[in-house]
Image (tube, rainbow, N blue to C red; front, side):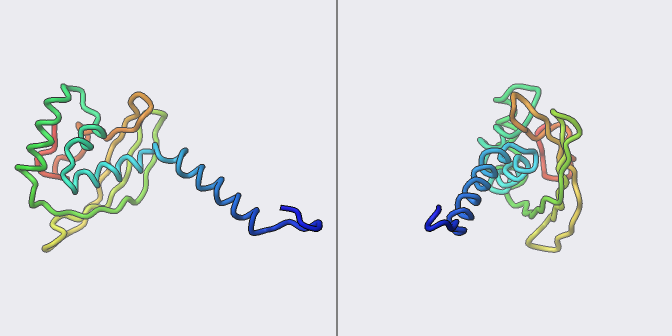
Amino acid sequence: MLRAGRVNFIMVAGLASIVILFFLLFFTRNSPTNTVGDFLTALAKGNVDQLVELSHYDGNKDDLRKQWEFAVKEAGPHFRFTWKIIGGKESDATHAAVNVQWTKDALGQGYEKKYEVPCVKVDGSWKVDISAVARDMYPALPQ
């Protein structure tokens, strides 16, 4: 870093960016916004395993899996949508809401609607509170 009494600014900037990248990767990953983004990606892809993992459900996990399989394979396989996360807020340490701009029928005559996707923190991880998601957001959401 020091050569003949001078600081190599490129080296300092490189180290600073590594520290910032480390912070962003390891300390912001478990947030409600990231959880909702992962959840919506899984919903778009029909990834039942990830949907079960990211959903907060009071009932039996096998029942939740069956409901998700029905939702993505029977009720909504041709339901196309796009989304954009427009903000989020934590109401306390265990509850949060993420605002989503949702476009239904993305391939046809789509229209936008705003939804609030509720999240709860369970065992240190954020999960989407499936029972509180608006029922008109996606066909046959688990109940």
